[in-house]
Length: 255
Figure 1: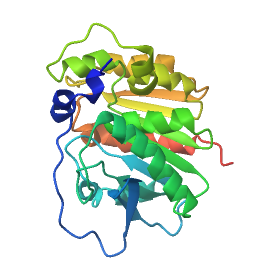
Figure 2: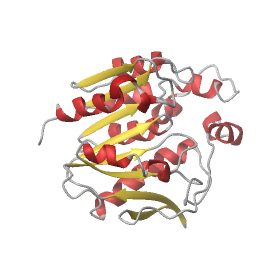
Figure 3: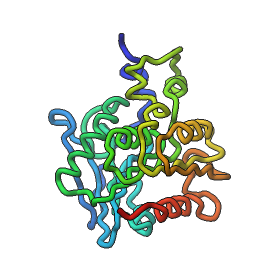
């Protein structure tokens, strides 16, 4: 049976890729990962000499890696070196994006970075909005990942489909195994922070609570930030966004 998640209509209504021809900062490292045949996905590494861990970041829909060039300093202040990843068709990457290949590519990207010495021993995988699916995919499959941060992520794939103007009554076990974040997150056992805007009308905070309740992690935190929605999380009152990240990261074991 054909899956709606593989349909052209779904994926064209889900992804909003844009190109990015501009060069990155002089101190960054441009990384290209072959994900399928000659198709390459672009990642940008921002080194930090005194970093204690790598923050592997999967951005939101409509964004590209350069959108984070001026934000990385805040992550560095949290003790991270940062690698921001694009999707197929985004920024300097080749190909056409789909939800399936974004998840499969996340695993390929992680393996490439690890095999080529691009990751520190401690890795925190973070996903924002659509990127939360890539983060949950990795953290549910790779037990060596140290921690996980989910920002504004979806839980149930049926509302995700309905927000694309399509309708399905149910998903198959095969679809759930790949696309249902609230089921996959049961297999996330590393320390987990879930952040969501109280006023998010695109992805309801109920989905954040569902992911939190379902998560297999013994050490997990849910932060519903007041006064912000889906795309302005970093503007939370009194620096709440970065304070939540700092509290979480400082609570992690150092091993």
